Length: 264
Image (tube, rainbow, N blue to C red):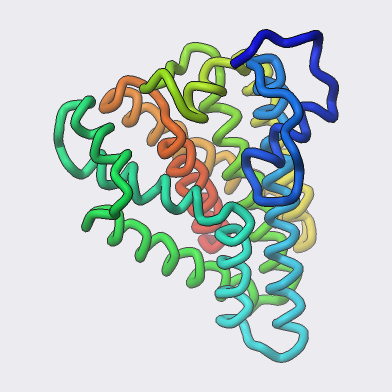
């Protein structure tokens, strides 16, 4: 990254978050570690926009008579489209790297290959099936439940990236998005972002009353905890984070939050 000309503005941070984590037509005007810090702190906001867009489409289809399953498929498709499938691709590549059982250097080389191996295919298949199954169950209870689930999953998924960008978490490679954002977010700020994410998710769950608020807040915390477990494993196996690992963390955290919403 180049030396920054001065403190980045809030607009710079938002541009970084939306320009790197979505395909929305947002131009990243600054590319330095200070801007990356602000951008990764804004990551949950990008997730909220993606989640709301997904929930809006699913809810509209349900209200038009499309049925819970169609609404669920559409809702699962929107985040993939708004990220060009990069997070799903990262999940598949990380699964191939972890499943190879090779040393870190060889596993990282496997992850950089353009093809997807059997571990990646299986992981993608069951991840998408689980997303659709949970969302269909939520939409069966009402469009508001499905839309809230999409929002909770989107925010939780991106907050997992904020936590993975905290100081003390190294990059596994000297290049790529992982290296650009690794270690940029102060640990205290990352934890504060996680707490705010849980509060926002609880607010979304309040559509079904106080129990729903508690349920959604706990679902977000469970999703973030799942992301932390995967992050710890990837650090042990690869020596740090990569762009693929970030994608895997987002998908895993978001799915875990959805599954938690479907339980109880």
